[in-house]
Amino acid sequence: MKRNLYVGLAFLGTFGGLWIGSDVLAKRATAATTMAPRFEVDPMWPKPLPNHWILGQTIGVSVDAQDHVWIIHRAGSLEAGEQHATTNPPTAKCCAPAPPVLEFDPAGNLVNSWGGKGQGYDWPDSNHGITVDYKGNVWIGGNGRGGGQLATANEGQVGGVQPFNDNMVLKFTKAGKFLMQIGKPGKSKGSNDTENLRLPAKTYVDPKTDELFVADGYGNHRVIVFDAETGKYKRHWGAYGKMPNDVDQGPYKPNAPPPQQFRNPVHCAEISVDRLLYVCDRVNDRIQVFKPDGSFVKEMFIEKNTLGSGSVWDIAFSKDPEQKYIYLADGENDQVHILDRQSLQVLTSFGDGGRQPGEFYGVHSIAADSKGNIYTTETYRGQRVQKFVYKGLAPVAKENQGVVWPKK
Image (cartoon, rainbow, N blue to C red; front, side, top):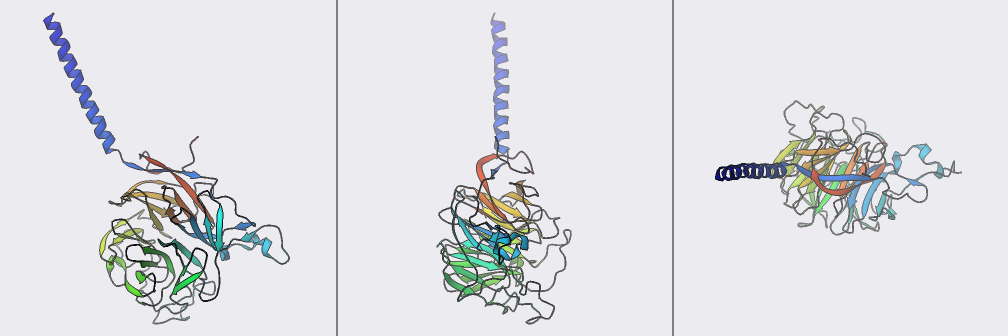
């Protein structure tokens, strides 16, 4: 009887040990599981535009403190057949270009629109990028070369540099009142000109210093910083924090040593909560990270074998206090990549090429609201803004999620 009792106790002890061990292993496995934000496309956002308006190439998005979503698009990119309501007499009832700047409320209702040529400022030939800063001011840039095409080899060159038309950024109120212009059309002297820009792609205003950081851009090869109130020049730098130059680097080669200069375009510049500046070196397929003073910290290549327009188009940070994740718009591969911000490793990606909700054609810009939802815009013939609803953190099950369609 005692022998049976001892055997039973031994069995229970062994079983209990196995159960405890398996439980510990399960907890360790759970702890080791890679987590990442999960999204689903909202195919009903935004609501239809009024007045038979349609969008052209949609090349900027920003979210303000009220979670209103701002976009900017290019009416000049629309085909003649998309503007039949504007002919005299009208060819048909539809359609007409929407104003360049559009503001949507969180529900997707259009609440404001403005933009275009006006007194006291030089509106870009080709709008590019929009930022609503922490004070509620609206900044835009441009990458128009003038005359609707690339300047010829000797046209208007200064020291071998083509100045182009869109050498400025503009500052407005939310209502569209002009406040300030930095730079003048046709005046750029290149990547070390401290008075003019050259085809600037995107802006960011630092709430701690009230400094304007410009990804400059499609013509220059630098980040440049100004006082956001006065427009006074502060500093600038190129790749690795070095002085930029405008020497033609030739085509990007994935297997070559890391390029020592930014290629065109330098497409974004965003500061994180821990005071690091992330710069999109688009065609070089990389993010470079700096301190706000221009000191180089590190870099990471993303989809390094991507040719053409490159992989690193724009970024947004997740809305947790540490900004643990980066959302990266990749307009050549037509995906959004989710990165761990500390390691800059891609955790998972979503999207695919196409025109259905959740697909992309030239996903160009990206922004996040206070609830963690993200918004993307598309250039080329994509011509739209999309909303992706934040669904919380989830284990990473696939490297490529494909189209994140709403679950039933």
